Length: 314
Image (cartoon, rainbow, N blue to C red; front, top):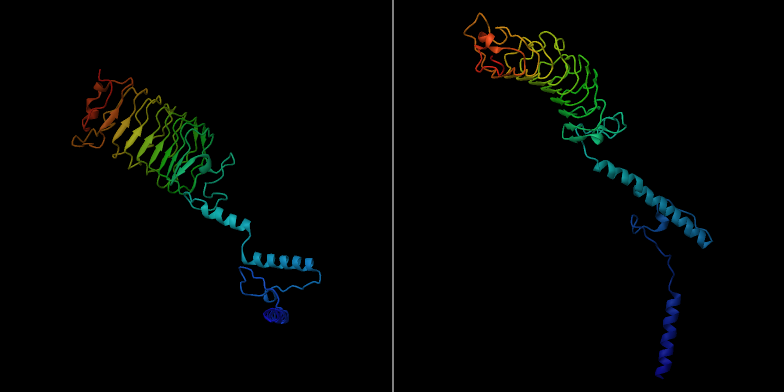
């Protein structure tokens, strides 16, 4: 009897399961969760061939997902742009971009040289010309290179530039306006070159070093330093000068003229002949050693100075 009951119950359960309605299988995508295929934005036609239907489904899903998410190349481009550091001018990587303008070597300046903040270091890079500099450069060092010429526009529009150091190059020619148009230039270092003529100088300069060049008798124009009212240090050693360039600004503190060919000095070179009360306190450091001049012949030339010049007194 028990066996008969078990067979009857089993047959009843089997019939119930077979009579249950069959629902369509719903496949969900992570972006369109809880939305059946039939309600997706891009409905597709079912084919009787199962393989064709599956292919069509895959194609449509790919298009939907691509519209929802950016493609891989776009993501990489965005990451590259976000990770690029901003140097000096913070502009784009093209032209005068984050690594500076393109140089003659086809490299950005800040890749060929070294840029730290607004300072550009191009020392010992075998450069034969001044590289294009970012507009916000304040300090530029290009020592121990092969630069032969400074052109008119090498430093054009660099309104923040305060220091230029071109020590130990082969510079023999400088355009007369190469530095004059720099509104904030304070320090100009051109020592150990082949310069024969000084260009026009901006009145903002406080420090000039043109030692070890070839200025000679005519390399410094008359009154070249007269209007440099903020000039404090002037170094013109080893240039075969035969005179002291006058007039010198009242602001001058140090004047180095050693190892030239200066043979004489006037009594009003530093002082005022007709004003014995005049005192020139700022000018404390004068170097004239290594010149064929006897300083003892012009004692009144130093009466207004706090210290005697260094040089031959015999």
